[in-house]
Amino acid sequence: MTAAQPWEAPRPGVDTDVTTLEVVIPVYNEERDLEASVARVLEHLAALPWTSRVTIADNASTDGTAVIARRLAHTHAGVRVVHLAEKGRGRALKKVWLTSDAAVLVYMDVDLSTDLNALLPLVAPLISGHSDLAIGSRLGRGSRVERGPKRELISRCYNLLLRGALRARFSDAQCGFKAIRADVAREVLPLVEDDAWFFDTELLVLAERAGLRIHEVPVDWVDDPDSTVDIVRTAVDDLRGIARLGRGLVSGRVPVADVAERLGRASADAGGGRLGLQVAMFTMVGVASTLAYAVLYLLLRGPLSAFGANLVALVLTTLANTAANRRLTFGVRGRQHAVRHHVRGLVVFGIGLGVTSGALWLLHATGHTHHGAEVVVLTVANLVVTVLRFVAMRTWVFRRGRVLSRPAR
Image (tube, rainbow, N blue to C red; front, side):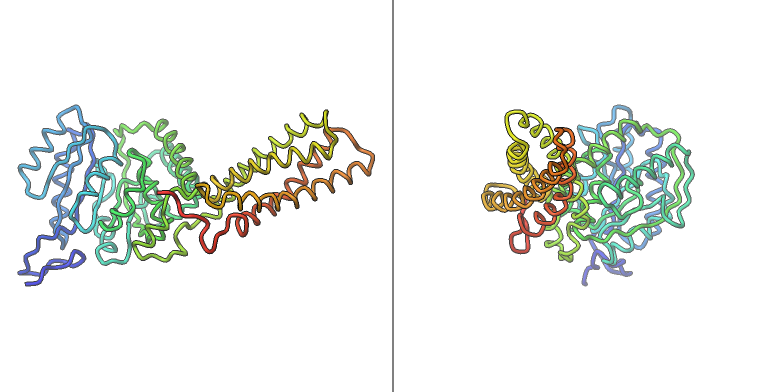
């Protein structure tokens, strides 16, 4: 007999060793809720038309959680336990998901804040092959949520921040109810650096950048008043994670395009939102360059003329600006083509020199020679040149065929 494929419901009379669903429940000191929660999950899975198992990922618990988990595994054939020496939800999910033989990997919080009736619509698009990841959303249309105003405000602000900073298009990053196809997990998980609470966000952003399809399911969700999550610490860690991930995407250090290629996704979708990230990084580099230029100009204005101080300050800041944008904004690494890039940057510098010198000449023609006025006029002129510099860098200075640079491995 032919075994059923992972995306097919087992047919009557057909034996199969394929595990379709693996539900991972990460736990840390959850001796009070673990047994009842696992029983509810097993009961619900038994009503679904796919083979399944539950994996308890014990994150170095110090109470009786490990004992209860082992007892559940001994009692139920569909339960297993993985013990980790260190805490971290992301660490636990990476370990279990990357070693799983199941076709679709799920995780849910042990408090079961999300109604389990959302499990079927969560995994069905993955089993059918329609989508790559699926997430429960507490912020989508049709969701019903019971939680305090503080957590509601924090959640909405966080997701707005993701949309602005990382151009995320999914609605809810942190709902503890997600699923991913195993083949997708094997490609994306090695790129996820965070081992704690930012893991969810990083996974979703990288998946989006790789052109993967994320299916959202509105869920019924009831807040757990006994949650031990440190909101302030988690928020700070999330902000650090956003900054790190943004830098990695802008610089090209994270090879999401390679993931898109290996999974056969449209390469045009890989790196989506890159322009916005490039603009943000270019702006930060530009602000730093402008400030450095102003300081250098004032320091050089004494021993040199206005035009001489402008020339030297502009040359130095242009070289530094080109190097910074080469690495940070456009993700070009190594020495290859470095000379070419700097020569092209100096061509753009020549245009900037012409604009700033012209602005300086016009100021002096009106009879104003105060150093402060010169700095103001030159700063404005440099801001005008900035737009031209960005376009030139993006379309010419760092362009090499159709690809700027492949990230170093």
